[in-house]
Image 1 (cartoon, rainbow, N blue to C red):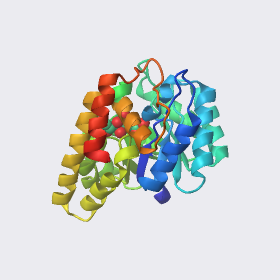
Image 2 (tube, rainbow, N blue to C red):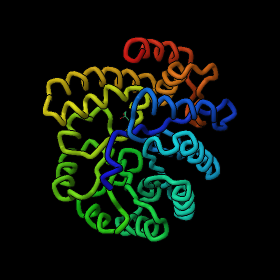
Image 3 (tube, rainbow, N blue to C red):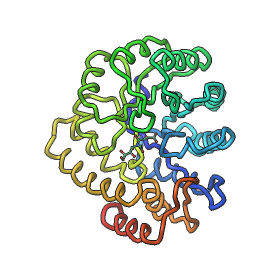
Image 4 (cartoon, rainbow, N blue to C red):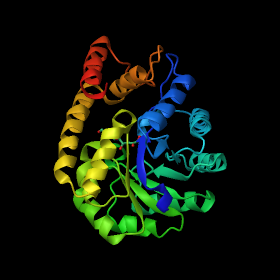
Length: 294
Ligand code: SI3
């Protein structure tokens, strides 16, 4: 469990114009994360990987490429969750065979599942997949809000080792940290890294670390060494960057920057129905790249 702590990039996936995975581009992004961003691990198959727009075989393809490229150089967590529990279990077994360090599963969504249904989903996954599991809680996108009692029940399941907490509810984060010292808590919102680390999270997982990993590590370390002034200065600059990215289109802009960073002459497309980057967005993405990353 201790081994899983650290800073993870939520892996962005480049697609070709026809919607297929751009394998060469994906390998380059993985190398960029390992060699230049010096991240501790990759979170594969998350929101940033446009995972919920993909079919099962495509998800497997991405899990395979990531493991093949990263080998054992960094830690790998596979997000296998969805509302199709049979697929979740199949993917969980698949990535465990591949050697992933842990699995993660988003709360089941779309139908308004009650707390028992959410609990049974995780129970069934942990009973069938022999790997550590990190709950992926992202109420903003799933609509599934969990309280301290829900987490308490879930954390009793033997293979559950923590939560990827993508929420701005810092009261709940503080309560969770105090109550569950043994569980791993990963912060999910990159723009709120300072308050998350101040609340003693064990790590962070985010999309912008793919391109802003070095600064984010500095934030993490500065809070840990009680240099709040320095941490806030870097967070302020980071948030100028993140605000600009969010205003221009999150994944489109991050992919544009990655395409520039890894010198790919092929455009990194998004997966439909995600919109493709426009010429105006490209121009602004280039400005953001020049100002904050290059
Ligand atoms: O890919 C993943 O599953 C994530 O790690 C999601 C992560 O929490 C990101 N959230 C979303 C909705 O994309 C954040 O890293 C987010 O992009 C960033 O904080 C900017 O808001």
